[in-house]
Length: 257
Length: 336
Image 1 (cartoon, each protein chain N blue to C red):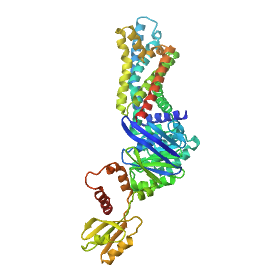
Image 2 (image 1 turned 60 degrees about the vertical axis):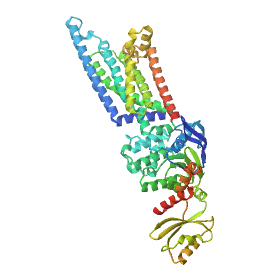
Image 3 (image 1 turned 30 degrees about the vertical axis):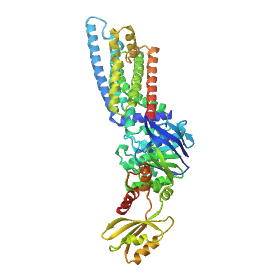
């Protein structure tokens, strides 16, 4: 466990001593802030219209349903765009600079290295999510949103991000070129998002399959405040499988030399 | 301490290391010598557990590197060809991180980091980022990293590459000091390094071990007959002829000539010291004796003769290899 923490700390430190963490968090804050403003103004205008039509006033609209949920839904797409920047260097940079030789000849297991890298990236991601929590906090000052669906939504976001990170690690472990890793990761993430689009007109089996594969669709229930074990298990097994394949990829690299 | 048995590594159809067997005793420095691409790095990577062997066995500090990699790695320090530094960490941060993953107890970490920094003379750069270090410092931080957990076995892949002459001497001195407590394998293609630092040499070529011996034994083993180099100012007289008549001299070859000064290679029977007779013959003829020295086969020549053995042992096309091949090193010796 000590080794995992040491490697996770090192990963996190290297995010913050390079521009990556600042760029990712900065872009994240900017885009998220924009979404927040856009959805908030839409929400405010709609609630004003509703009150003009003689309904019971602004409070009648549900903050959770009509503001927080669509907002966090957009966050899932934001993750898709920004996460490749976080994961692309994890393995490829170590391979290119030769520092992978240090890790692979140190008395640590491949699993500890992978877990360290995964947790390091997860921690950066958690910091990103913490930025979004500031805006949500503001809503508590001016309105009365329910906190439970927010908690489940964030749990879902953490799991969702974990899937992206596990997949990103895998792709990064396959190449020593960061740019290649980043682009492939982005393409795969995007594909996993739009995969449902063909489902609706390709028959019920394909529809089911694509919905199942779409990482983002599994988040919907979390957004509604529901913790469905199906989705929890889906995410956890996705993460496990991704990390497992990463371990295999690192191991096969040894054999191929 | 290190035992390598029939180690073979194949990459697809290419055999990088072919049936390599050797052992290193505790406290010994073993030089691993070979041209580029001979399989030195591959062998070292197998020993450090970076990659598995296709066949064979490697035991480091009593643990099989394949069956018990963690135990073996705990006792091994490795300096790869390019020091594995993280550019965005300072030297202290880097060494602290390495000490963590190498299992140095947290109470001793700070002290160990200070110790290895002093030992490798990088303490004046302690807070400098690794990316801002010069090549010499990078190499030494790499060495510090290998030493941090006080391993029994040190495996150094070209530890003096890229250092300036002063640093090379310092590094060699450091490596010598480390022997005794540590068992060391170092690879190099710089031959003097081997004769200066190592107790034993493994010469490897195209993945195969071609010789294992002490530098001194290798030198004497390959020296068939004694050869002297004599430079004479004979005013145009045929000094070679009179030198050839000295008892015990088997062959005299003229190797260079400039302004009436002629250099000869004088071969004599093994165990027959003809230096006195040579000097007497020259002086009594009234010539000037400018130089008289034994020509030992340097490690360079041994190395060349061993690593090009395949070519030499094949039947020579026409010219006998003796003269053409032998004249070359002499020319070098004179120029140098």
